[in-house]
Image (cartoon, rainbow, N blue to C red; front, side, top):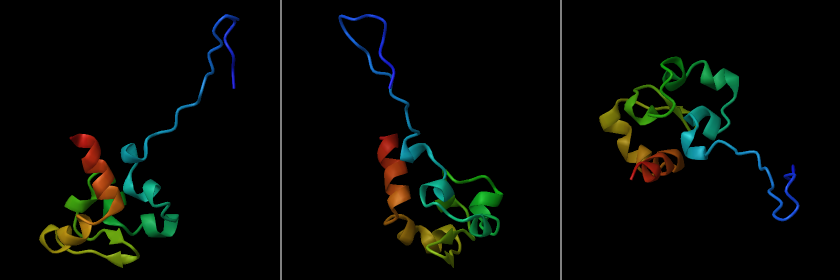
Length: 87
């Protein structure tokens, strides 16, 4: 914590953390490296839009095409948080 030189109104400098909604999905879920290297979202650097990529690893299982996996994505904590920030 850092206080300003102005003694009348001390200002505390707080280190800002990256909002969870700005993170890639693999960081949001703390995916281990061995999972990241086989996930298509990681390979295509699509961690902010993983629901649009076929073959992603979600909850340890490989997800298929967008049309087949979107139902799971709509319930996903990461998907919900990313979309909540957009509106």
